[in-house]
Image (cartoon, rainbow, N blue to C red; front, top):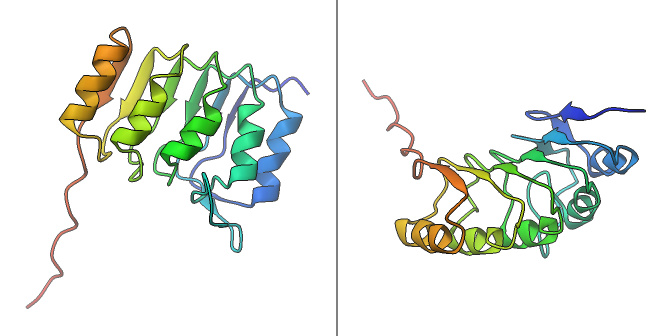
Length: 157
């Protein structure tokens, strides 16, 4: 198979299904935005995140040709991003809406040497965290927009 681009976001994916990605080592573009685990695939532990258990993150870190990866609206953590830091060729990383991407996660991204574009919209990254990242990696273009607004109050009559 010679598949280069794959979008699987917004679906329920089993860990076994995501692990099948190891059969696609030539992928250059991967969109897993909004992926949710299919029960019971939600183990706890280092790097565990909704849709991205540690075993799956290790498989993703083996996709060495990836240039673009979207993980938006997932529960990826700093530990998960550390596991993926071996993806030297990733130039564009989408983390929009990732509620666990904070300043510590941003500090992990400093080590992503190929990174050129970073989407941090609707994440809890602080201005201080952004400034530290920009000081360390001034050439990376960042799209940011703060934490999403809280949900509206329940309707009452």
